Image (cartoon, rainbow, N blue to C red; front, side, top):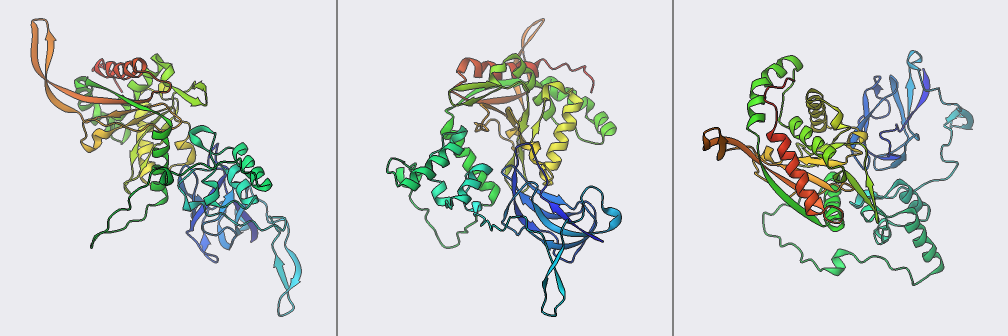
Length: 432
């Protein structure tokens, strides 16, 4: 047996730290290779961390609620020798201290250089703070309440390194020139809710707090405008009914309408690349990749938006597999942080719940989102070689919300119209 460190793994390109939510094992428990032993939360996703070795959980170094940097040790595992692969045994086991019986006591090496860092309770706020800002706040002993008063100059009003360093400097010199931002409650008094007998108080979970904060931020940052188009998707309905059993038999999975919607949106973005942008102050960043997020409702009632990367480069079968994979992992809490990062445009299928249309809120820092309404049979005027006629057609509404700072009605309306055009011209004879 050998003692090895379990370190906080890298969970995404932009993730540098995570909060320990709970331990699934306790010291002394046997653990198998790749068995989940704790749950952690990042700014993007909650996930389980598997063990890198088989053996026994010897010691827990990071307690529940603690914020830990990627690469830092979080536990000690007494691993079987045969299982020592990538990690080396602990380099130092000093026998310098003496126990009460005079025997040598093993002393674990210090990973903090003798400095004890008190962990701030960032769970008490729904606001997003970057790891760098949190570290500066901890070093300067800035409370969460103080941090929330600092006006942010970054994207989505987030606090930058310069913002917090300015705050620290002004606080040290006692300057009166630094003006903390006024809270919404101070500017607009909100009447407390009334409570009656039998009312139930439900505490928001961490994800709901995060969603609430981001939705409020998005409405504050971006002036939303919504354009609507009704699309005739009769060809898509007939085609799906024709091929879905073949697809199920071949792939062992269902064929939903979502892949066709993603394909049409990706094609429309190719035609109108200025909808695939982000805003950075007074600069516009046109994104090269078309990464489409798909909103997924979780069993808890919360919403999560995993991303299909380079969606325009996948065929319909590839899109179907990508959609099914992301939806399943989302509902089973198996998404990774990278699955939620890098989106440039979002689709929300409100028709899943029988809604005919919606006015979705933009996922910052994107500038647009489309809601797909329920498909309904409707009498419609159609052109035939013999003149106009009334026919039963499958129709649905598309709702396109966009950021009016950078997207005007001409572009916003043209994009949603082009999506409808691609859906209406769907080739009923294509294969999958």
